[in-house]
Image 1 (cartoon, one colour):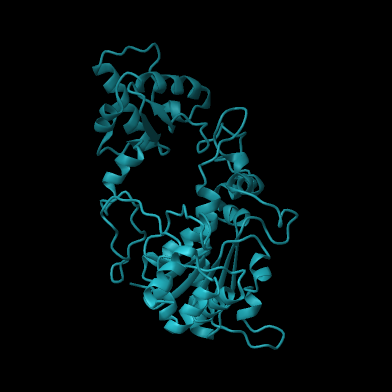
Image 2 (image 1 turned 180 degrees about the horizontal axis):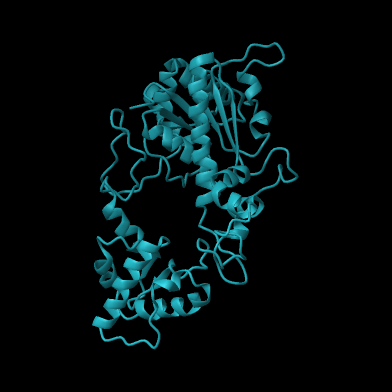
Length: 397
């Protein structure tokens, strides 16, 4: 695997930072998640990771965290700006600063924040919908005439946050191979969302006809009837995305013939010219809405299967999992590399949660702590009660 031998310390968080760690773990990195003692976890992005639970308010626990990071390649910081510095784990501790030698000058220190560090919102709390709002992208997304909608928490948290964080880590590791030095990778989800949305944003700013009209009137924002989702007779949906004229022609000819074959006689039947005639778009949309409602989804899916009509069924998560190459409900790592593929996926179809502190003892031993050291940390209250009980029972403290 591509990242074998790489050690990553990921401080427990939600969404973007765990996803960045997951990408590295899938490709062989040893990812250690530092959890807080006695706090349960709801993080499902934990495949191939291990957990150590430490009380970072305890000086002994903080010293252990410093030791782990000082011997690792990557740190992933999921907190709001300034939190790691307050804990005594900021980048200045590990990198050369003011003439002082850092604890780990090779460390790639990756941070995922919500807002740009130089902006007026830098210290505010926020979530996906807020980052989308400030990025300019939310104002462009489909929805109702009254307001735009938002794509779960995919665009800011995972594309503009976690994915770009992992990309930044890999870039910094590549550069470290030449310079021998680590650096700070700063990701904020407002800027990240803007970057992954470069295509629509640049089209809007250049007044391109593709996206220059009001929201809901353009080909990609729900304005075009040949790029939309339609409800079928069973309440399920079909997606239509035939933007190119040749694909639209194939779609429309097939659709028209199906309606005729099934005895549907609409008052108006569109031709290929309807695609380029915006005045016909409202009629075309009504025609497609009514037509799709005459048959169930799987009828339409079978009809368009194998055709260059850019028309496929909208699958449920359970249906889509059956098509996943891994055969698991867990999405397969992607992209796939031919010589150094990612770790094989768990095919048990079970979604697991990594319990905080599961690997505390083995991680401490790996990082050179003796049994006596571990017993002393347990006595000092660094671990959760459960972990302390296991250690004291094992070592008869």
